[in-house]
Amino acid sequence: MEFRTRVDTPKNVPGIAHGDELLLMGSCFSEHIGNMLIDAKFRCDVNPLGIVYNPRSMRIALEHIREKKLYTEADLFFHNGCHRSYMHHGSFAGNSAEKTLDTINTRIDRAHRSLPRISHMLLTFGTAWVFRLKESGQVVSNCHKMPANLFEHTRLTVEEIIEDYAGLIREMQKINPTCRFLFTVSPVRHTKDGAHGNQLSKAVLLLAIEGLQKMFPQQALYFPAYEIVQDELRDYRFYDQDMNHPSPVAVNYVWERFAECFFPPGTQTIVDQCLKIKKDLLHRPFGNNTEAGKDFLKQIILRINAVEKNHPNLDFKKEKEQCHTQLNMWQN
Image (cartoon, rainbow, N blue to C red; front, side):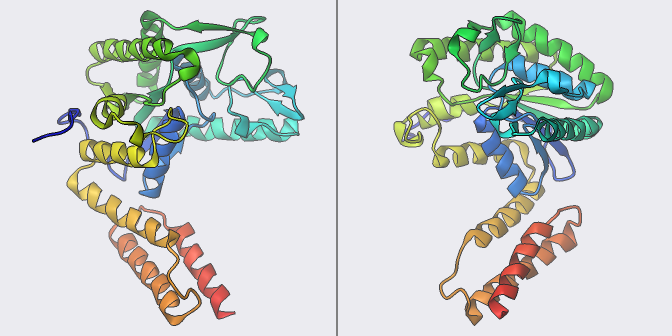
């Protein structure tokens, strides 16, 4: 007897392989999946402007990447001792305008140069609610805890999101005709919008993505991360302590469903090998500075060498340096 509702995932979709390049943008949920892809040695650029929650800000961010926008001091504001951008996450803020702009523009340049090579853009919509600066009408990615009376809080419509992304997809196709857009809706609950407001928001996002799939059946894909957490897991056991974010167990389960959907068997084998190496590097064997501990690290190096021999395009430089550094410390 089946005690859960298993959510169907897309069938016969174009697979994702280690030779592909990926761009991920969206909420903190996309960061989790992006970090797992990086651990599995996929070539990924995750949130070049930092975490983005709403589709409008994400579309603007992608346009800035496509146009290779050069940010200047006019795009920054100063608050709580740091120079900040309303289009960027707080992790980009700095006490020097020059350094802040260098970080921002370097990341945009890197993402811009990768656009012709991107095979999949993984775009995770978090909420249809947006904050607009009353003074300029600008939709912001991050309010940076500025006073609430500076902003207007409104919800995007299905039609507005479709219009935004139909134009964006057409422009991106001129640069990279083979790029596919893989949309997801974040299972993170935005309870600040109220329970009903959150549900309406998610419904807008889902309907907009459906509209884009109908317009671009070859380019626009949908992966049901939201439904997997809401309908298949469907239990507070799978949420973190704040009861809004999926727990690590839930994120790992969504990752497994994502992998079975998009990774061909050969790719999954490589993923398993990479993640096993990552897991072992986080493990601290009993004894540490003992022959057993040294042998443990040497075995990891041998396994890395074996994977690199069969897949020379994978980069394990950091992992090998970590092993050698630890061995040298123990020997000294």
